[in-house]
Image (tube, rainbow, N blue to C red):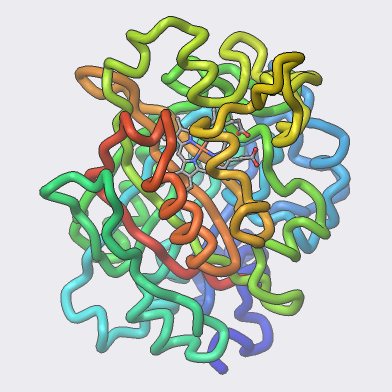
Length: 369
Ligand code: HEM
């Protein structure tokens, strides 16, 4: 298969690009990481972890210990996601007849200034292309169905999704501009996003004021279980959703917001007890027999145990809509059905999600090695 040609894997291309800028055209190239000096490099290049992309946070020991094979630029790496996101969903004229992986491989972004930190680019392929290019590996690829809180004018579709992350907004934008221009594409929809200063655990507060990304797969075992499609290629599916939380959510008393989430707004700690990093205890009850994690709370409704699936990896960014709070929901998983089944549960009942509207959405296959 094209993506298995020796020397043209994503990693091979990235190393080659550093040595002979742009000379290699690699099938299967799906992402880049530009090092601090602007040289394209691999997430595991050299022995020093690229930790500290957010200088004010020490990544947790478990993420810096992540084996090299599981460090994927823009997905699991850097361990503390960069501060800025540019997400663009693109259409390309005649895409079905093009060698998209070759186009993508030739679209490596130009180096960015050092203050942009690690600049990561993840490229995802629409299901229709993924099924054509990687029929076996991408057999689970599928578009998302409609959900309860989708906006009337929902934007979906597109040929490729490009997710660029950097420590500076301009670095992310310039790199994204370069990729989009090199692909000869049109932008179907786009959204910039930011992450607030990281917590000591590498998570961040979203524009709702709550810390997000606490429960996430951070070990090789959990990534194998829920994020990579298999242990050989480590492909994944990228779900992106542009969501607005209406102003009435934040207008509620803090206690009501906390009951809607199932966690403390100030610390992130579960209402069921424990510290900011702990899982919610779905069974914990008050002295008078009430569930500490309320029935309609988001943490309970979204809990993967209900659907018998492993954890998806959430790596979302905030944005500021004119009214309310905005979240570019970004998640990677080995089967898009994990998202579909979770979202269906949130549609049925969820005191956070009932206040949301999603107006742009997509699911894209991201080939690995
Ligand atoms: C505006 C949209 C959303 C906001 C503001 C939001 C916020 C949060 C917050 C604050 C938490 C608790 C902290 C954590 O564990 O990270 C959480 C957990 C979670 N969310 Fe969301 N979320 C949103 C949408 C979604 C969607 C669309 C899904 C998937 C369909 C989802 C899936 C999850 C999962 C799986 C958890 C972990 C639950 C657990 O196991 O404890 N979220 N979210």
